[in-house]
Image (cartoon, rainbow, N blue to C red):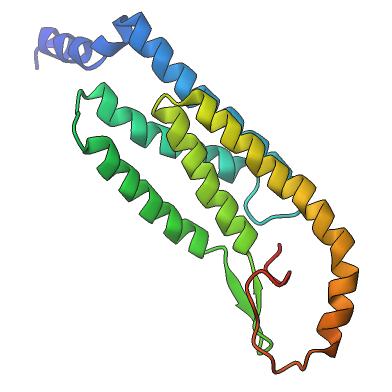
Length: 182
């Protein structure tokens, strides 16, 4: 084994680290994705969600990384679109694992968690693709939905709960009826 070959190979593998602009761009995009994922994950963790801080950080980081790789590899054309399709499909499976149907009454739990994971992946993908303002705006909207809208629902829920008691228990469950909260 020749150490010169090993060193030459390592040097070529890490050649991108010498490009300060590319390294800074990648670090900024990945860090933004992690921070926005952390903000969403923190909110979910504070409300007892099955997917909390670490999960949302990792989902955002993974989505950003998958969007960054084709750009760094110099792949153009429809490569980012194909990567994004794969991320969306993969995150769909992850989110589906958070959704549970409980008992014979058909109560569904975890839809908000699944939607949060899916949206966090989109925020991470936007950050990874270099759309920082879009990622930030989307994360702020997600936080508003999870925070302010949830408070409005709690205010509204007592009236809705009394109406649901009047409904026969054999009535089908409607998504969006409040039973999908977690």
